[in-house]
Image (cartoon, rainbow, N blue to C red; front, side):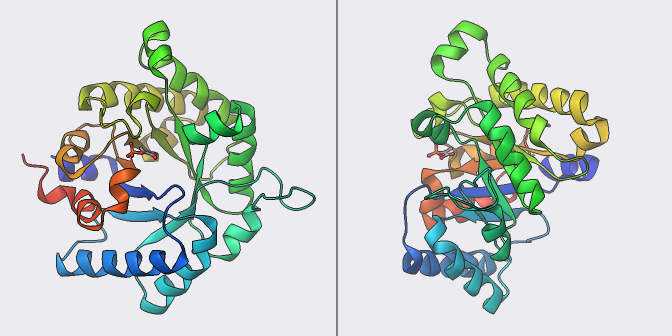
Length: 268
Ligand code: PEP
C-alpha cells in the first residue's frame, strides 16, 4: 500500500497539475478556490499528499494572493524559468521573480519546451541551476518518444536526459523528477504502472550514482502522461513512483481532486 511505502521512504507524494496555456488569472482564482473547498469537504489530509498547481505566469500573483489570504494548503509553481537572472532576455522570466512570488516549484524541461522551443539537455541543466540559485525546487521532466522507445528501450533516453540535467543541480538542494513518456502525454494512452516503475527505478539508480544514495531515497519521482482518477492508484502502488504530473486532467476540478485523493482508492 502507498501508506506503507510512504513510511518506509519518507517521501510525501506530490500531485502536480500542469495547466499548460489554459486559464487566465480570474479563472485561476476560481479554480484554486474551488479545489481547496473540494479537498477540504472531502477531508483531504494535506500531510499525506501534497498538491501543487502550475498556472501560466500571468496567474501566479493572483494565485499567491489567494493562497496567502486564505492560507490554502496548495503549492504553486511556474511552468518554466530563464537560465538567466536578469538582463536583455525579452520574454523570459527570472527565477528571482518567481521566488518573489513565493513560488515553491518550477517545471523544467517539459517535452513541449524541448519540442517547440528546442531546449537541449544542457539548457535544461542551466535552468535547474537557476532554480536552485533562487531556492526553487525544479521538477525536471524527462521522457522518451515512441521512436526512442523502439530504438533504445524504455529507460536509456530518460536516464541520459537526467544525467545531463543533474549537472545543474546544487549540492544539498531538492529536486523532483518527472518521468513523462512523450508518447503518453495528452494521448490518452498512459504507460502501464509496470513501465512507469521500471523507468522511475532506473532514474533513482542514476540519482544515487550522481548525488548519493541518501538523496536518491529522498527524491520524489513522478509519473506523467495521461494520468486520470481511474489510473492513478495503479501508479501510486509502485515503489518508485511518488506522485504524478498531470496535464489535461488537472483542469477538471473533480477529476484532479480525485487524483489528489488517490489514497482513498488505492486499495490494498
Ligand atoms: C503534461 O502536460 O505534463 C501531461 C502529462 O499531460 P497529460 O496528463 O494531459 O498527458
